Length: 203
Image (cartoon, rainbow, N blue to C red):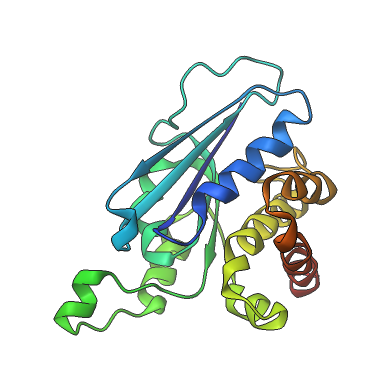
């Protein structure tokens, strides 16, 4: 079984990323369960999506990933990655975006919220950590809306190359086909361009 947690804030598209991953697994004939835990998402609160995949042909009974059992965490926001660290397994992979999203509380208080301390914490505490410059991908394709797909693509690609996280369970082609099934038709090409940009960035 593969356990994946996608951590972000409201509006970043963690639910869609989870849907694409689940679709890719289902197309392989695997049993999948997903769930979300949402805290005031429309106000920039935490959104954590869980994807559990029966990659050995087993049935998945429970939708939530237990603490300490995630093979992969995709952090769409570094601070949310830190918040989700307790889910990561002792040999798990954590792939994090580089840009922070200040919380409403931080904005109201005028607090400084920087990415570097969060990324340093993730690098220190995650067994296997990879940071991704999702901003460069978004700039290249001309939209911040594809950051979630860029991060999912990065996690799939890094897993294939390192053997951690998803390993070779899901290919880039399978993810691209799942994307076409889950994304509105007018946004498919934009998201596929993000996948290509990630492949170039990580080549």
